[in-house]
Length: 398
Image (cartoon, rainbow, N blue to C red; front, side, top):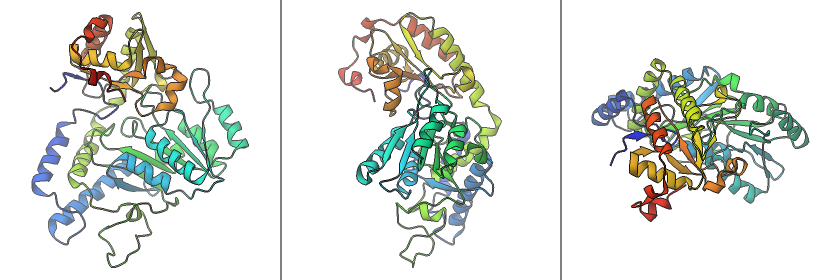
């Protein structure tokens, strides 16, 4: 059954704006051809739509004449292309924040084991904010080749100080990667001001588009090695991949139906203010849940100014998945339980005693009433409510 209250927007925003559904349906029925692969009108129209999306993303991040847009089927693929595209050697040193997602951590783990370079964690202060003074010292002692920072933690909603970190890293010529999966479309990320060499985005998250379209903006002067080769619709007589962006990174046919949805979402976004809306709900949840006996909150250090909509918590006497199962089974509330593909930060949070956290991530289409229902459920939480919950559900944390 479809959930009544959906609070898992950190995984994917749902529902989408109605204009996104309409655009995808119309395009799927009238123009879903292979873009740029033909001289006929429909192919040219699809190609123009893709150009419109590139322009919209450049405009969204104030990146005109600074960056190119590369489109990929998912942000995991985008992150992999950037990470695998670096000129790694055994002397390279990569830094990651403890808040990073496995889409960053796992490619680095694979490559570091294969090549032999170091992957180091950025240091945290006592309140679990990034310790910039210690970061500067670490960079001086072990100069970075590559630095990856998520703009917003998908576990606690912490808005990381990426600009300050990247400014320090630039002194050593490091490649700066900003994972904007939880941020692009939600918070302002003017390209030059981020100090990033590349910013990744996920169409299906804070951009309120569909699955199937993601990518990254990359500085014009940045260089990446080709990691995925195939048809591009240009210079097909040449076996070598194109040497210039974005063609060198865009092998294969694009999901034009998904891109049509993203185009509609990009036009819709300027009319709303999702951050203010999400932050208000998060703030109310933090204030009220903090009063409930046994609830331990995991939110951003430094207060609301560093907090996006995502908040995590644990409940004494329960595993995270048990709380999530009760909320679903008894109250039709959808939340996420587990480690959220971000294992490092849980070691610092101390949340492994709950087998991860319960994550609440409201979106633009949630209301304060949704948060109130969640709070009522938490105030009435009882282990007897687990009766009837299937064992396979209780093993479903991730």
